[in-house]
Length: 159
Image (cartoon, rainbow, N blue to C red; front, side, top):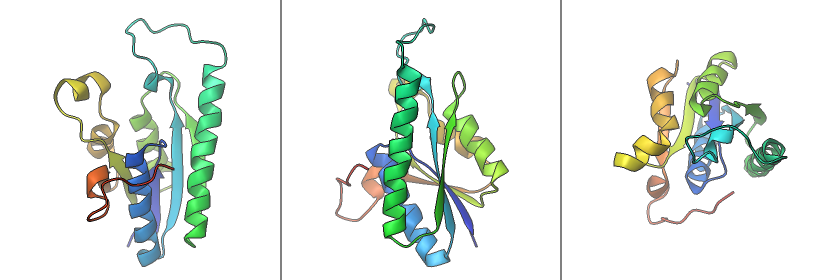
C-alpha cells in the first residue's frame, strides 16, 4: 500500500515518535523508509533582522543533521527495516518546501512526520512545517503528536 514512506526528522522527541510510527508501519507493510533531515538556519533565527550568522553555524547545522539521521538510521536498521537517508540544505527557504519536493522526487506514497501541536501566537510566530506539508503534499500525510505515540508512554526517548 505504501512501499515508500518519507520520514522528516529533526532530532526532537516529536520526530522520534513519528519515526517510531514509521518503523512500525514499514514493518507491517514491508515498506522502505527515507529519513530526511533539512538543514535550515531559520530554526535558530529568532530576530527579524536576518543577515549575518556566526562563523561555522551552517557547518554546525550540517554536522548535527548528519548525526540526527545517522542515529535514526542505526535505530531503523536495528529494527530490520529497509531505509536510506538524505540531508538537504534549505538555506533561506522553508523546511516544508524541501519535504514536499523530496516526496515528489523520490517518489513517496506517504509522509510520516511529527507535529508539535502549537496553537495561537506561538504557532503564528514559529510557523508550522507540518501544516504546510499537509497543505502542499502530493501524498497522504500522517501526523504524529508526541503524546499520542504510545498509550501510557508520555515521555519517549529523544534520538
